[in-house]
Length: 383
Image 1 (cartoon, one colour):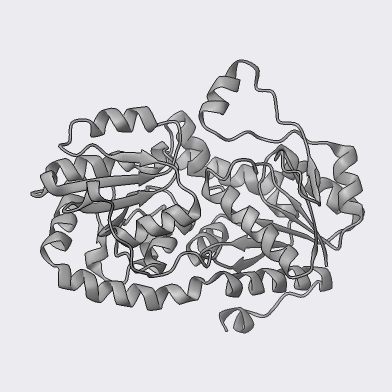
Image 2 (cartoon, one colour; image 1 turned 180 degrees about the horizontal axis):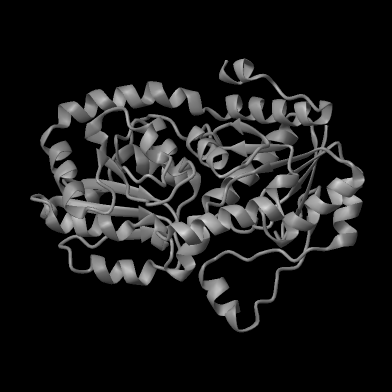
């Protein structure tokens, strides 16, 4: 197939969406598909078409600080790429994506989309991530201006598919995990000398408000074992300095750094516990990567997060936004290493369903169905 992928955000692989999209592109190319990508990425690989980024004037400094630049539509380029494809897959409901949707509809091209951006990811920039009315408005805006014109929507989890249905999204909702890179697997890894004897807690994700890394720092401060705990935060983002200041009060200040996937896989395998404190999450491939390696998670039970559904036992969940509740769960797992070992084995087996090849199979199936204008019955979807 000739597949056009339109990505408003596709630059440095410093967030889950960029990593997921780049992996999808690479996998589709490996399977022999002709993939043409329109994005603001400076990539010089074959099939990439670069567009400019939007000039936000006085807000450019803020945009740069957040590490996400939005693409500026290039109508001539979009029309040229889309006219020569079999199906158009549009990743985000912003300016470039909306222009691509309009052009694809004009040209009568099959259109698929993905839901990677929760309203809370947008409203968090204004400190309004917990406002029901604001987030409901954003869901409606996304639908009216973009998703209502899409025939298929890729939903990384059943949680977000159900949420979209409740908000009136009536496209063919395809539940397909973003998948885990083969590098993430259970294997022996030794802690570096400086971490020997410490209980290492890992959390991975963009350093932003809705990810709530501050709750982990507060929880460790309240733990009975605070002196032996080392927090490792894998990620980058606008709250890095604030988190470093908060963590400086701990006996073992947190290590905050960004890693290649190989480095992160090694780190996951020598850590003792994974904590996912995020308030809003469509899937959190970061948590899936951890559990696929057998690292036991402790997950916030937020109603706005799909990640809570990955928990295999109640011991793996804590009350979202409550550092004291998180501290108790951390202490429990420190005191019960046998429980951690047993759960680790269960999570390795559970993680097999997220293997990348299986997920790419389903993405190919969605594209083929879009080209053929096929929509399976409810029974076929459940199967």
